[in-house]
Length: 135
Image (cartoon, rainbow, N blue to C red; front, side, top):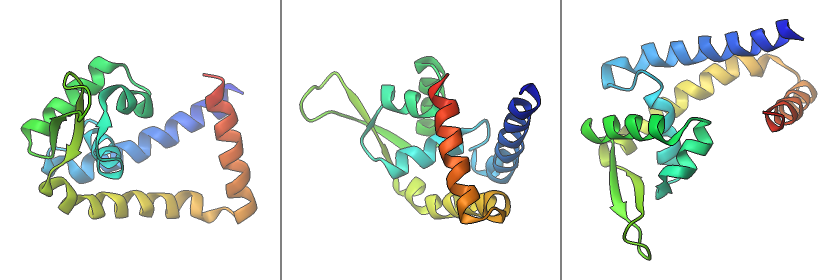
């Protein structure tokens, strides 16, 4: 079982390292591309929801988002109801880059998971969901 867990970790690290290298010139290394993907896909996302999606603590998420703000990819806006809450929105710069990042992610998925049959893909999704629920 430990070998399988290590293989999952290796796959994740390789895919992430590849994307970090690909988008470093845009200031999106250190996994910031992943934060940007989620913010572009869910404009108005709240910090806590982003941290939960990324499975990181709020401090780590906050630091990554602050760098995205400085780089001009994300902006914080007050919530319409609760002015203390800040929501995250992609800027035009982020929106313009999103298709490239999404296409890269889709390419990685096609090269790896795409080699599985549809039944294997479904089984993999079910098993990963089950595994993640245990953490």
